Length: 138
Image (cartoon, rainbow, N blue to C red; front, side, top):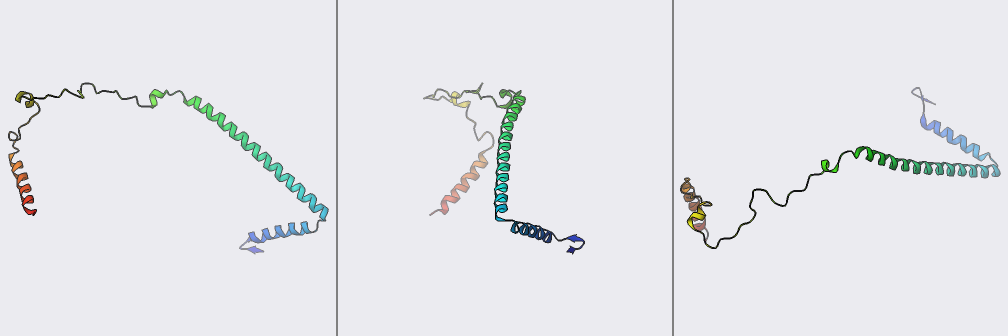
């Protein structure tokens, strides 16, 4: 049957299936056995060929990968990986001897007077906020 100028796909497959059913029914029992044996043999041969072909293809893939790594191995590992960091930082003293007594001259290197830099107003504001907070707590 035509469907908008085309053959209906289901109708075609139905006709194909119907043809093979009629053909298979008209065979004698001996012909059916031969057909089943021959189709099983063809299927097993096709399966064997496909398995062997896939095994050979995978072996060729391994060889081609090895050839590709040989081609790409021109880059040295030193260029790819970051070198190890040194165990020490040059110009930085990581530890020092502890002093038991500090003089004013020794501490003057590390001490900055907050009153010199005009930090007294900030100190007063911070202390006022802290005092307010502590007065609210029962």
